[in-house]
Image (spheres, each protein chain N blue to C red):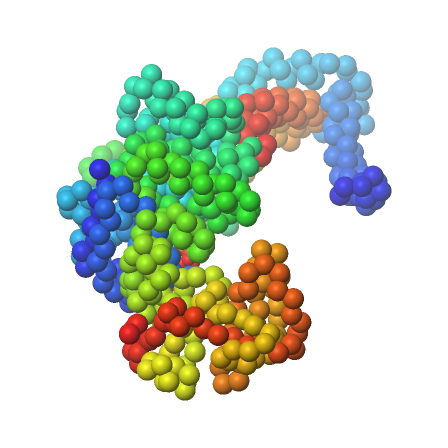
Length: 290
Length: 332
Ligand SMILES: Nc1ncnc2c1ncn2[C@@H]1O[C@H](COP(=O)(O)OP(=O)(O)OP(=O)(O)O)[C@@H](O)[C@H]1O
Ligand SMILES: [Mg+2]
């Protein structure tokens, strides 16, 4: 891709894909934008009228919005923290030569292949259920009161479920990064008198920064939109204790039949996601430069 | 101090015996070069001394102390790797300072030593760069810098120049030799390169399949190779090895004669032959001569020697330079 000619050719060839992707994005976005300025309730079809910024005003001043915003950030931050720390630890373990390595690796990757709804249901009914759940059984066996996770710690429970789903992804990416660490560098550090901890801090961790950046960026994109896990476990409750922005938009437009308000929420969510993205790229984007 | 003694050292990887049993004494301040064909265990031996591999059996003594079970950092040795193994995210200064930082030395002393090493190695202008922004030769010097700041008992080099181009290699060879002269520290150096081995070493150790074939000064190995393997390995181009009646007539199973010890003439001599390929290097001419009843012989003629493919020439071995080997391959 060096000459002017080949650059032009490249642009020409890639343009259909870019244009298609652009349309794919811009059409729904502009429709949402359009709806967000309408008074549009599904219970009153044909009564749509222009309302200006009202939808935004109601959405942003709704007390549920502040709660949802906090929950979203807690959810994203919590899951990122657990998956990065846990993923690094697991990757370090899996990188050790051990018997049955192949099988163990597949087992570790497995949760990633389970659909979010299914895994959330399994967690809800088989593990966290206060009567029949595994945790309840364990608690009773130890002579303790079973804890109703989804009622008393709904957000933490959802963070746990989502982190469990994303841990394999982080582990996988970090493991491949670990495997690309030059063995001689480690040996040089060993000869230089670095303890295992120092080797981790000065050699392994810097080597992993790029992979960690990738994990953070990709996971953030997906975690901002967590929905199924909330829908099947807590329905955003109790109250708004486990409602995130995505769920709030859903509640607004489909549970309250208010398409206008929901669309305004959607646009707010897009803007928030972009703020987060810009923030992230500012903070850690430079790690991606070779 | 850097006296290293290997006693009956063995190394196995699972079933594979890489080093059957090896004894070696390396004196303080010596420059020892390990040579041998690829896969003969040179790197393994170096890593055993460094402590990066566990010894399967036997002992390693450093300055008389048993170091067999010591972790690498405690042995007081520094290693320069073939891939340099610099830390890519650290600047040159931090790379060189790393071992000192790990030793919890104070800042002022670290800076003094790093600046000193940088001056010796001509790296002063590059201290704030990262390894990725350096040329191969500069990286090599950083790796050496990281080794010398520790003031180790001995340096271990594993083919440190093999990634450099020919001109730079000559330069670095001189620099390392000079470094050795000024530091007077023991150095153990692994190489494939004949010239490096011959020019740098106080003592060459020729390895073959994990066994020591011969230990000696470069000229000892050149003048009196102990066996056929060393004879064929040391010297470039290789020694001509001739078996059969010609050898028998001299009371040996095989005789060896180096290319530079065969006199060539257009008029007459002992062995008549026909010129095959001739390689003109300007300073020398290497001729491949076909003589009846012998393998193709390589002959070195000084300067320009004007012969052509198919020309008839006569070769005469210098009688005092003929090496004779018995049926077991040992020199007689
Ligand atoms: N970790 C290992 N496991 C099993 N076998 C090994 C291992 N490391 C080295 N070997 C074997 O030991 C032998 C010696 O290897 P070594 O790396 O010491 O060779 P070398 O003399 O340094 O070769 P080269 O000149 O190509 O670098 C080789 O046959 C190699 O296959
Ligand atoms: Mg090697």
